[in-house]
Image (cartoon, rainbow, N blue to C red):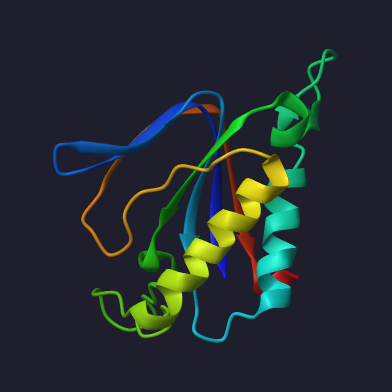
Length: 149
């Protein structure tokens, strides 16, 4: 599992003319799933993203988590996080999870983050062409992979 975490002032995701998710201050999570991902990796990633201390405290140090500040989370599925560009110039997405596995796994991840935060986590729409708008605060962007767990 791979998650690109962006600290945002606000973010939203649109599918066609419909806004499917919108948040204020918090985290935009771009989420890639691999067919070998496990429940243990899902739990690790949920703990990591909700406890990641990348918001500033009163002294200006990145010392607070999204939970600490009562921030929002927007999660967007993104199979392209598994793009492999080692050969040629066209990425291969063979490592990305199949939709049959990745879609319910992504839903379980979102449900677990929502439970951890105690409120709903808006999302894009799995498998759809989406437009993501955000204002990255900092900018702060963190790469997380269960390969590192």
